[in-house]
Length: 139
Image (cartoon, rainbow, N blue to C red):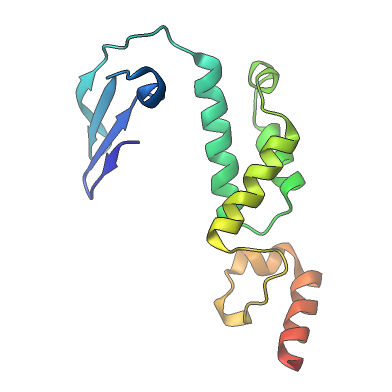
């Protein structure tokens, strides 16, 4: 994505930085209104698939406290055989999850007060959260 405002989103080609490709799509209210479909390269479906997969992994890493192995497994379950064939190595995906969380300062061991935790988080890991809450209350 190149830019985003309240109503308008501009997507640029994934080869913009390396290949200086000028391909773009402008969306307004999720409707395409400008397309610059002139690319200076053939389509690379493998690269696009990998980008979509890694975007899903990063999104899940930022929005949950699931362990990296579980995130990788859940993202992989939704993929076709062809997409699994071009999947990045598990170590790469796990490292991406750790880095995403480090940038946001999110950790599985972070102690958060009960009233600040989303309902879904409370239901996903009750034993671990219970221990962390007890430790936080004693400090």
